[in-house]
Image (cartoon, rainbow, N blue to C red):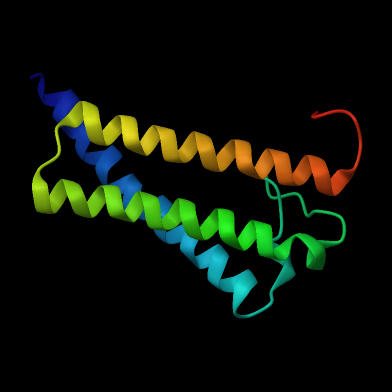
Length: 114
């Protein structure tokens, strides 16, 4: 493999842990500390009636963070192939994104997803 590609793969691998820990921090902040600043969509815009949607946002962030950390730990423990762990990480990140979009859409209560 090309040397730049190996470094890119390493950077992506470290990014899995950073994103996973960030998601778990948001879940902990909303779920335990009741900090409603983190009840927000993907872009960080706060949702209307944040207390109502705090549970859903906590669950989405907790599941996404735990999933990404699990993928990272499986790579270390089992040596998952590159195509498998990148595919799993992408699936988790896209699922996280769309789940937050659905919750933000329902919180807004409008007909548009923009």
